[in-house]
Image (cartoon, rainbow, N blue to C red):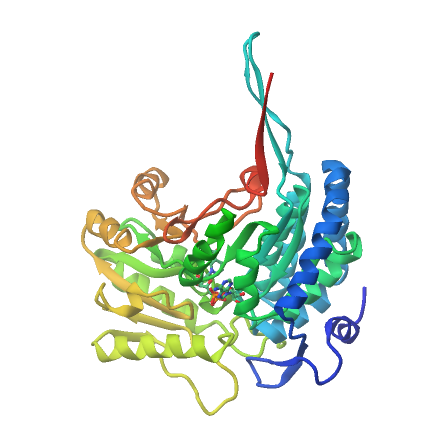
Length: 469
Ligand code: NAD
């Protein structure tokens, strides 16, 4: 375990040679990130190629043991990691935020380490004996976003390492320090060269996606970048797991209890101040309880403190960057101009430093309004009234993305019937966005393809090989 300053110093380039990263809550400098180039990427890939065969040869048990030790190392440095994450990303230490994210890193490492991964006997009838094995791919590239930078990096690297691969990580240029620090801690337990973070820009990501020596890209980010990666990976027929953008719908059925569900609806939409891929981003409420749901949700949302993440009182933080702040502010403004009713928020205090946008609820909004149809990726939730369940299902399924969805009801069977009609990779009942390292997670439609987590997630980081005979 190191102090916060020592951890930051260990990932910093020589003074003046890096890029200053600013705290989105205050505008103050957090630290300097190295500016890595495509030449640095080449070096990282060469080191990964050199380290991978010995790591693969260790076998599952030894690799699992190393990952369990890495989880312990993350826990030993948890407070320092959470502090850096809070300063760089903006999310508060408290609530389902920075400490929660670091805790999730340890949890995902442990589940990736301990999930059984045995060859499967697919036919054994006396004449034929066929087994399905999963072999290491080689070197995997991991490209990630800025919203949950540590947790998503672990989602990508933990199964890759467990399956015998080396990994080169390209973090978002908005949150490189979090990922560099996390990798520094995990690397205490791994052989040299096996896991390297290349802190570069989009050019480095693009080169990684087309590189001959990379067998697979794990990508989490926007649908637009996902499409660019599909194209640049085509020449090498690279394997891809794509976790892309979403615009998740939630449907509140007429029998739901507005008071009982308000708190979970709030966190389903506003976790990480709305900057979450599988957050509730469009809420459809039956007309009979529309007023009551709006009222209860507004009560919960109004009571949630927002501010600097290092203040233990706060559970909501700033938007991570100016571009995202502008997206949210412009969408809410356009909704207001189109005649929607701002129930709560919508009035940022621009005299203060930081990209703070208040928790905002927008009622009586048209289903075709851009605040509904575009991924706002921030603390602004449109609430749409519906009359029949058929109408709600049709509206929920109308977009070309389908990451998550949710159904809210007092009756589980009714909710499950509606859930089965929704086009999304996961449908939650009476909750939204609850991910679990044991349960497969992935998108439908243009939210991506491939599964993460659980045994399916491990298999996605291997090359299937059938031994027949
Ligand atoms: P982004 O697509 O702008 O960037 C993601 C990463 O891709 C960054 O590291 C970036 O440098 C890199 N990149 C950019 N252009 C590239 C290229 N041509 N080739 C290779 N790499 C390139 O996404 P973002 O703004 O950082 O993240 C927000 C988006 O991510 C939202 O749409 C959100 O829904 C999505 N997201 C999805 C999931 C999921 O699990 N489905 C999780 C988190 C975020």
